[in-house]
Length: 319
Ligand code: AMP
Ligand code: MN
Ligand code: MN
Image (tube, rainbow, N blue to C red; front, side, top):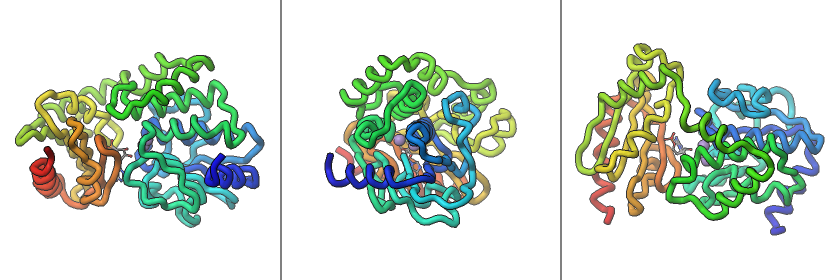
């Protein structure tokens, strides 16, 4: 065990009340990593609260431990751990009134090491993969319910083991989880394939808005589209994964209107030479080389104009 691992184990061993948190608009890796770590800590006798600023979406409530999730912390904690989150701002309100995390466990290229101890591996496909690698060394046993959460993180961040960063390690970890009895097929279907009728109608509105120029393909989703379709989330319902399959694009972008002054942007790099994490950083966001996002101030039209100009400029310097 290296020094960092020893320190992390020491902090876990000494703690009684532990707060586990992750990023706003939690995805499968944020939720899976939080719940896996929380369940494992509970099984060694710790009191654990999982605090996610936006709570847990209904579509992930089948995961073991999902009833542990709160939107606000209560009381004192002698250890605060953040998983799958690249910076303090992205934990949202989860740590309001509390100190910065003692331990940060993550895989974002753009992580700014906002914890006291920082375990960040940008080569890992998911934070769940970092956890699967190190939990045994911290004395945390991976059981089937914990494994279901880890598998969800692995499957969702790799879009079913098909992203270009998928590693032999991730596939071995998935194989080990399968041997534990984790139902890969079911978790895959529920987290990546299945979606509601309302989400499909919402996709329809987004697909109708598709545009293309200079190797960039983009789509927009408005507040009105959500109203018309009945979709209750404030995200793109994963439409970016569909837009990213269009063969003509080098970069795919999704613009989701939040209100008149706020627009969520997602980028996907579809060529190995493209690095969209730097683009997202220009707009105060972050992410990975092939997938990044930012919460931008400005109306849909304003943000779209600036983001498209910056994206075009970045492609000029891409070989
Ligand atoms: P998304 O576009 O929201 O699907 O996110 C793509 C990737 O970028 C994920 O790894 C996110 O965690 C990351 N990401 C999205 N938005 C932000 C942000 N505002 N700051 C940092 N990372 C982000
Ligand atoms: Mn995430
Ligand atoms: Mn992740």
